[in-house]
Image (cartoon, rainbow, N blue to C red):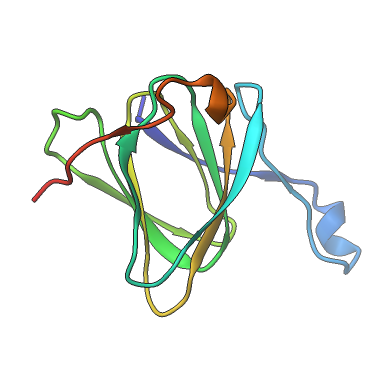
Length: 131
């Protein structure tokens, strides 16, 4: 199983056909205990870390970007997932990940955690980026 899973939502077609838009639904496999709105400005990044204590779900709500990940801190092999508004990912415990905006706009996502940040020591473990 991939260390980062791209999640696909379900959608009841009736929510599309009534002309008001759509309702897209994701069902996480872990309980969500905390969620945060994260903004990344153009030319910046967030990440180069992993979490020891929680699974993290990312729901992208604005912009376009990429998530670069590796299976462990010792791994040098990087994987890239393109993301845009409506993309959703599940990041396994121990997976090194970094989010980058692409283009001139901000990248915004909701980060949902399976354990509250303040109950984790440490909540993140920084790792050096791959050269």
